[in-house]
Amino acid sequence: MIKNPAIQVNSEIGTLKTVLLHRPGAEIENITPDTMERLLFDDIPFLKNAQIEHDYFAKTLQDKGIETVYIEQLLEDVLADSAVKDDFLTRYLNEHHYMNDAMKDIKGYLNTLSTHDLVATIYAGVRRELVDFKHPNLHDVAGSDAENPFLMDPLPNAYFTRDPQAMMGSGLTINYMTFEARRPESLITEFVMKYHPRFAGNVDIWLDRNTDARIEGGDELVLNDHVLAVGVSQRTSSRAIQALAEELFTNEDSNFDTIVAVEIPHNHAMMHLDTVFTMVNYDQFTVFPGIMDDDGKMNINVLHAGDQGQVVMEHRTNLKDTLKEVLKLDDLDLIETGDGDPIIAPREQWNDGSNNLTIAPGEVVTYDRNYVSIKLMQEHGIKVNEIKSSELARGRGGGRCMSQPIWRDNL
Ligand SMILES: NC(=[NH2+])NCCC[C@H](N)C(=O)O
Figure: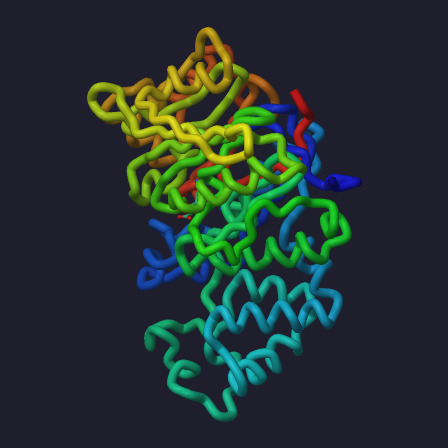
């Protein structure tokens, strides 16, 4: 049992107290048309305006009394210790397949930077011409792609702090992410959790990134203090969900006994469950109707803890009925993205109209551009705080994706 838990997340909706963010930096402008797809972007945002929008998002949260913690600051704190820094750089370079002499040469350059600049460089990517290789091998000069101007790619997705890990209960999963473009992000989480005094020894690690099964935080929803919903998606494999269930159902620090595994289409527009489904109140959810077939059916498996903690599975096909069952509710309000209109719904889903950050029961923060979904939520009694979205939306993630709750009031 952890004495002073640093994490408390027992729902998607409890009043938010502390949240982890990343302010977009130079990495956003280190996307090129050639690398865009690999870096999981559909366009190149204008950094200056993306930062203005992101600061507005942060201020919206701060004005509600929510503490905003920046992951880049936590990393900087941790790398101030030179042994930790060396260990981090070794892992970071190894994971980019640089060893021996190349490792020495690249470290030689990175060690000339202040800790602050080093962190900015890790996010921005390391350009090839900055390092002078003494005995280069083919990989050192060409990488996997001779056109690539970067030795280590930028991390433009880092402002989606939701995905490299997922905090639930008194702990977190540190995620083995699907695409190489994002894997260094969870290496950062690992080091912060291991070495930052705010977290070290004060968190449960339910899964670590050496778990050989893909999972991302956008798929991991905490419905209440004992029920999770996890997407089976482009980014999260059923094997990872099974491993998570086995861990949570037997670890004595965990109160979770149910995981609803919801299969969604495996594509870029709907890469995570939270792009099509978010919880906004005790009995209200937003949902994109395109995740169901024409009869409203889906592929859902409910994993329960059996009496020895073993995983028992039951198949379901109706989302609403399944949620009523696991949450013990008589009725439930599913609010359709874009009012279910065949043109508006997919457009607003694409721009993260289903991706709300709930900051208290019945109160959300969401992108202003999805005005049809916003109006509908308001008609259903939800309080909506709108944030700006011209540039941030180009990365395909909204309020929920851009935030990792660290502490929520218990319901
Ligand atoms: N939780 C989320 N839905 N995050 C959205 C992440 C978007 C990002 N461009 C990616 O493809 O990984």
